[in-house]
Image (cartoon, rainbow, N blue to C red):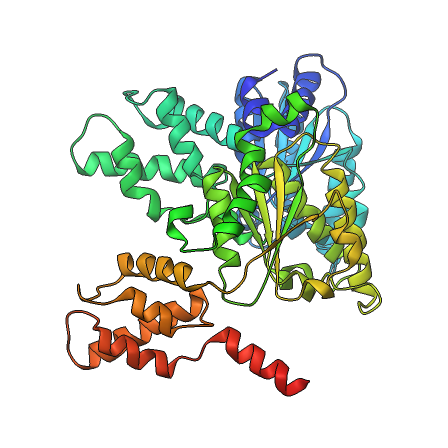
Length: 504
């Protein structure tokens, strides 16, 4: 079997490799496989690579090429391609790119029916291996999809798979001189979050072009650094993608000492001291719920957990879970957990949790099904020894269904409240590092005057003070403008308490 397939595409790659081995080495009945996966994940490349290893001729059917070469007579072009394949005495393979375009589920005409008859005859034979690719298998005509013996889904590459892909490209594809060692390639691949095979290939190509522009004979880390931002990441088209967050350290977050300590114990230690947990025979908490008023820094804390633990970060947008078709919402929840497991260690972050996982009594039919699927996926994490942590954030913990908060699920509740005077000073000190304040600005005096202000409020105050200074054509933000901004920006916490008093 080819090491490339299993190392770069995991179990799915190994299954495809095995099909090639049985067909072309052991001369068993030719396999018919539907190869599924997002754009750029490497469907066509792995087929061509395996065909090269097993010395197999490929006949490729692409809808656009057949339409152009045979003036729209697809069935004639397809039939001719099949004839070429059958006329070859050596083992061969027919690769049909984007099967859903050839045989759509809806809107079929007489030409499509003729194509179906040709494909049906081909698939029922046992001499030619047939592999079809598709980004949207649900759009394939059902009577065609059922003809394939096996379906293989190529997934998002895990960090290890990305390393092997990059190592393979670096050694065999792009570079005449190998300047980077294995450690360098591992470092580069660890930065390639959300990259699929096509993105890694593009990054290598751009790095080589950068080296050529500088008249260098070798490609080094600097060339990859120069071109990192130029890669248009295909994987980001997917709603569920784990990635590295913008680095946020504990020192970048002012105040919130109690919340930081609780998260350090509940989430960061899981990754940093995993061996200690195993030695003691205890399982760490799988989930942490951050709750408190808006603007207190819950999302920032979640990013800091991912950064401090060197884990991947998977932010979940609640609207992405609401799908129109029956059963699609549950599948979306399942895909999030599958992605997190493949990209572990990973932190799944669900903001405004109460928006979709409220109590079952108040939730509709879709809400109840989503809660059930969510609970199934959380409990499944116990069965797979993977480093996946759930972080939820909410302003209203009382609205969340109680079954989600029971022990073994989101069982650690961490309150993120309004900062006190000392914490406000710390927040202002962090903001000072990012803005241009006059040297004589008294942060302690500002902190005293901002009772009830959250971190987001203080950021708004500094931003407003910056605009006032800009209007005055000043080069730095003054104390006077900050005090004026405090009068213009209302505190969130006091406003909320005022609203509650009015309701009572």
